[in-house]
Length: 250
Image (tube, rainbow, N blue to C red; front, side):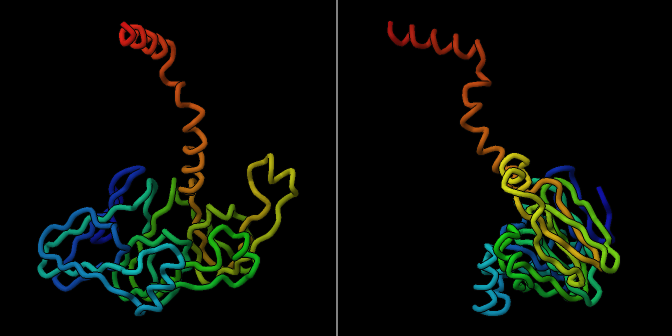
């Protein structure tokens, strides 16, 4: 358990965020993240930014609405959970902005606004894995992100660069410049499993990376479904099927 003032992140690979609220305090979260509420908490759905804002959020494959949880009494408690296995991370914003991939934002407290932003480079939109639209989280408060596997944090100095697999990029300060670059040829793409392009980031600023993008895990599971269907049954399973066949025939 990692304590952050009135917050705690519990668990290992399928974590839960527990937030203690005083009267009047509010949490803004993605729809469907609530695990439980205890004490006096009012829940409401908001179309942030109006219809246009909701439609822009839909372009990132997020829900049209964001949910607010407001405590009506001291001692209230809210439990939130991410939709996929992985870890959560707290990021403090002080009148600053964080650029995130879709699905990275879990919730926030304080004076936080969420919006979408278009990628700065045409190439990043075509080949960057997340399309033209990313999430923009700005203001002052505490933001909680979630990612597949574990978080890896890198701090880039001015003009320092880093190349990241496009699916592994979770978030970055808005001071970080991003583009895509080729890392090989067709042979590399076909046999190295790394693709032709990576996200090329230039500092200054902080970059958050995930070790296991959900899309990569889902692809591995999907590819294994057909090939291992009968593998776990072994000899005993085959023998059992033969016996069942004989009994049913009699």
